[in-house]
Image 1 (tube, rainbow over the protein chains, first blue to last red):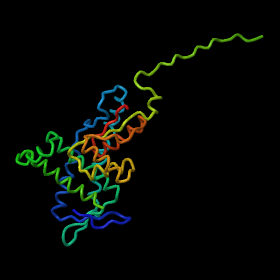
Image 2 (image 1 turned 180 degrees about the vertical axis):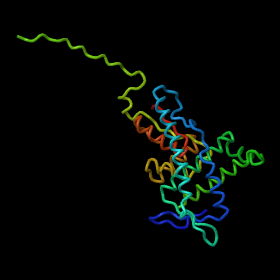
Image 3 (image 1 turned 135 degrees about the vertical axis):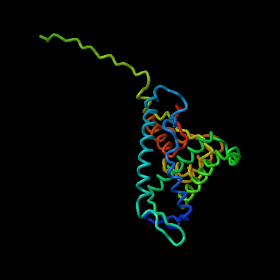
Image 4 (image 1 turned 90 degrees about the horizontal axis):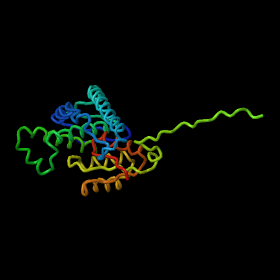
Length: 151
Length: 101
């Protein structure tokens, strides 16, 4: 996936047919981070209990909204345009921001499912057939995030 | 002749034990971002630029502080604004908290 055109209008990315397939497969996993995972503070101050509840509610609602808007985004007939070699993907800047959040949710969600390993341990997990799929998804998310962040 | 005076009883104001509104309005809360070895460095820089409106250089400075030192204090602000920033950072799944200064 590579950014090929960017002006005042939407950004345009090139994806091979295989990349498009993987992109859609990965996005099906959203959301992966469980509700209530995020902590507002390291300290358990009673004054922050209400604020923590509001954070949990806001993030749960945001994930639902993102899922709904993602489905609508991908269903748009103009989203992917077939080319001789692959596809062109058009995204507005707000859609890029949303996709970055979604891809990072999946990436961090996989990492949590693996037990939050440090990098050297993560590489060793590639030999474990049960854990390898999560690592592959993490790397795919990183690949798509990097492409979206290209200038 | 003066009219009889009705004694006025001032309502007793119960002090809220949990929050002090005056303190909430003081910039006494720190927004801290913690290192999660899973986040891309370019992504963290981008999020700091987006959430705080920082130039790339400042965003990279804090990203590297998170990466090398395990955490970075991003801003010091009121409780309300610190909560807002933490919410925004969590939307991008960064590990951020607010702490009393």
